[in-house]
Image (cartoon, rainbow, N blue to C red; front, side, top):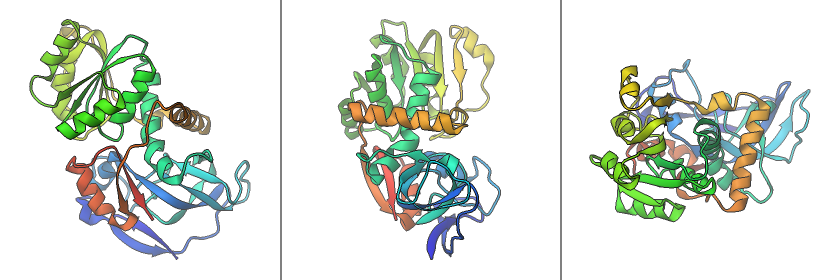
Length: 323
């Protein structure tokens, strides 16, 4: 008998319930994946809270790492005993094991343990997408990263440095400033009023080539005021709430700015795209450009406590749930 999380209504962390599940034999095109570790991501809180509406009842979580136990009919390229992970597809990673579509799997190298893989897959793929495909950062670019000590933020810092960029990071505490510096940030600023003025001062009044912002509503005006003429704002998260009421005329007045609101799943829509993104994550990990900073772990069935911690912004780096 397996254990799996379920939500029957949206709301706070208290809506996460646990139930016993008896998994059937994997169907055609499916495998059974035994989870060694499960990743916690902000998108999980959006699903749970209703910001991203779901048909209910629903499972939670997309990111997991583990070992294939059984393979269904028609599955090619995967076998029992093979290690694999997920960071897209149907929700339900908050479970001890589950049946998943084989085309959602990505390979995990022998040198990467489950805990590290669960900390890096979704966040690392997000960093790859943001730096290499959305912002297309070039050597010499100056880039502003909000929440630079967070789960995605600290990976962005390392990735940007490997791309030859100068990185300005914002953080909410002295401890997080030290972590952003350790990740490679050239300049670290405390979040709040005055950030844009400091960014302008650091860039000779020019502004940054790109803003990579996972905070959302609270930092939208800061982003507008920090980016250079014809620069790019990549708003990829809603930690403080979604950005709403965007007036396109602001983009003209601020210097013909570009804005995109990407979601990873549009950049990982096919098996080939998923494998390519995962491959970039493993390559950057092997090169030492990114570090699997696991700031905290929770028991799998303590997921509600983990949600409270990430929403209170008391976490640092990545958070992993352990079955």
